Amino acid sequence: MTRWPTPDPMLQALAHARTAGESGEVPVGAVVVKDGVVIGEGHNLTRTDHDPTAHAEIVALRMAARALGSERLTGCDLYVTLEPCAMCAGAISHARIARLTYGASDPKGGAVEHGARVFEQAQCLHRPEVIAGVGEAEAGALLKEFFTARR
View (cartoon, rainbow, N blue to C red):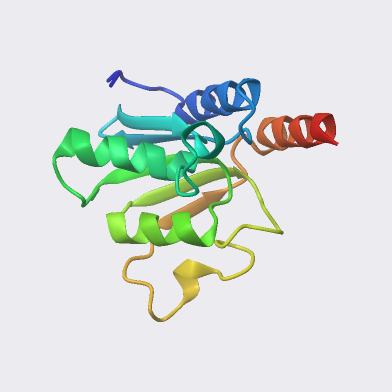
């Protein structure tokens, strides 16, 4: 795992998204930061690993949890290029992520501002601060290019 100070973690998440797209994965990238240091990072690996749970957020959360030696990522921020799905939003809540910053909205599969709106449910254990639309244009363009090429 690489640890380095990061002035703009969304740029790193976008770089991971590009890597995912280049390898045939849906171009989504994620970075977990604690105290200005990247402790978890990754991109979608669902096809590569034959694992439906290997979304970018889950990959980055797993790495961060190993780095901290705890399933609680209290005080950590997660940057992801696409609005998290219900599975990832649930994991973000269980991990106790302090702040979620994401790029492109996902009206079909997102579960933060669309669909299930996981953090708004009474059963939600922890609600992170949410910042949407950071890097939205580039994240959206990566997704559009990927899916246009696949059609």
